[in-house]
Amino acid sequence: VYFAFSALLVAAAWRNWPARAPHPTAGVRGGRPWVAPAGSLAAGGVSSLLGVGGGIVFTPLLHLVVGLDFHKAAATSIYLIGVTAGSGALVYFMRGDVASQVAAPTMLGVLLGATAGSAISHRIDARWLKRAFALLLLYMAVRMVLRGIHGG
Image 1 (cartoon, rainbow, N blue to C red):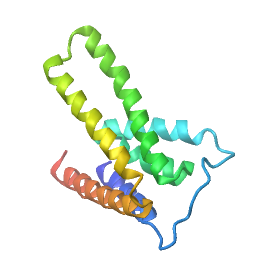
Image 2 (cartoon, helix red, strand yellow; image 1 turned 30 degrees about the horizontal axis):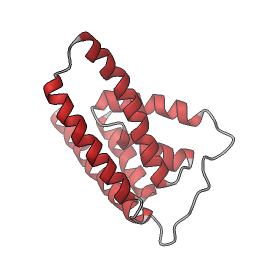
Image 3 (cartoon, rainbow, N blue to C red; image 1 turned 45 degrees about the vertical axis):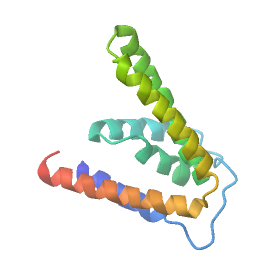
Image 4 (cartoon, rainbow, N blue to C red; image 1 turned 90 degrees about the horizontal axis):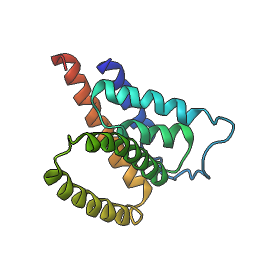
């Protein structure tokens, strides 16, 4: 499974590497409303099974398959992860399992970092963001191969 996921990450990195001239997309590709929910179900399962963050799966899915431009795909991926994590976090919080003394300052740091990252990302050409993301995908592919070799 690790090797197959690694191959998928390499393919996504290859497809994500920007061409010299960017290919703008108008928005979501029509005619396939089932792609995002079905892909999200598969992406959630794969990311949980392999212990990787959902963004490494959701962002290429939203950009390469659904057709969102890269900035919107990344933002939508983060939003989806936040909704998913928030739902689970609320359950754990209600059970009393959350260490508030750790969670509160971490939430503040995440909020400040997300605000800064969002402001900066719109000033960076999408081609550079896509290159950085492709390199991250390749790094994760190497990590998956090593997990496969060393048994997780």
